[in-house]
Image 1 (cartoon, rainbow, N blue to C red):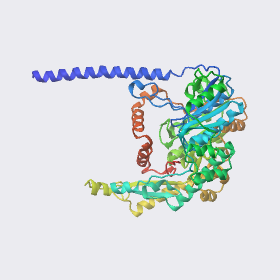
Image 2: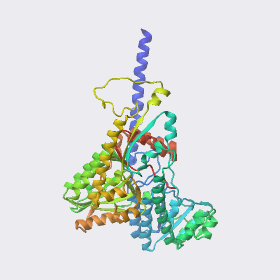
Image 3: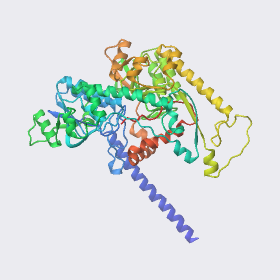
Image 4: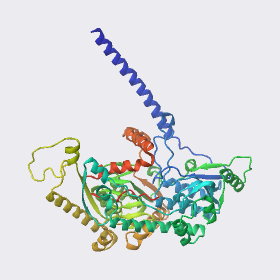
Length: 595
């Protein structure tokens, strides 16, 4: 008995001590979060400053409320990630800021889509109208960063650096072999010759139709890439193609020889150049400010509705990520949250027009339809203009098609009008690999339709195919109505085929090429307002909200990304398979990775 009480006492003491430690750690974490939340105080910009721009983190649509910033002492620190909204606003502000003398584009990897890079590039072109300088330097030029840097007044590369200029390639990861080894069959029901989202799970290489469409849109994007560099650097486009095709750019000296760069310099030489341009003595340090700090200096782009008193508002609704039901978050589109935001704005008399910013590969067909419905209803009441980002395809195009007008970048990936479903057959996994069998009873022939422990019967497959056909018919009807085309025509350019923004303009899927600012101006013009304020939706959750609503999930995702690095996309692809199964999908063929 004495031993029993000892154990009980030890357990109670252990629980008390653990609770104290947990509370202490919770207090530290909460304090850190509060500090992080209040860390965006204004920063003074000194005279003769250089705006230092360096992209080494993924660029999101909006700057996230990062719960890990300033928490390095807990091992939760992550790289600062700026949203495209703040990047564009900062460059625009710097154009007229007398304290900013120029921009220094430094070592960047451009972990962003083609259209995002395009928007930043165009912002730099506009910045140059101020006659201020833009200087670019890197030890390693990826093709993405070089495309951005090519607009600079001077482009420099380290004498011993790396300069990539070899053309575009797109790679698809096929998982069928792995599924076969596991004893899992992906049972596919689809509509669309080009609807290749299912191919990684049922094939080991690209189908002829998919190869055709990838060649087409990749060629379109590459042509735009070469055209942009040709214009900025004054080099014939055919010559640029020849340089890449024949592997003529192998060393930094080659880049200089063919006039892709203006010089081979070390970092200290670049810094000396910047000192001369800003009138700083060689013995002193350059006065510079990085993009993240500069945005805290009163950069106003997207504004909290509660802080706006104007009765003339243009609302930007961000729809970024995969489309699913429910609330969603900063990286996904929740049909409940997005449709609620659009509905609220439709009923708000202060909001004169809406810009729906779509950057999505699609997702759930049902969730997409819920959002489409709100767009269609809003169009009857006030203007709604779509601005497409890197990707606005499949479900991403579906939610856009009912708008008054659609604006895309030339290298936006869009279209993919098609629908599919995947149901797993895990019979071999259960029976042969794990030795598990199942038995049961049912009250109807189709009561267990979709059971993963066995293959579909021909009758069950026919039922599901009919449902998918019905979904595709609804999809093409919605696009035809929204775009003022016949359903037959939409079917001819649909079939799951992917197009670039340039191609989509020619076939009538978009109305013009441009960026998000063009969409805002278009919305204001259609609404007949000149003096207006911008408000943004859905509301981004605060750090404390995130803490209370599952911060642990973000912590887990943070560490998984840190551990897997570039391989995170493979993890995401496998994870995405489980999300796609069993429900009809309006989804891009796969994650398009252009190298």
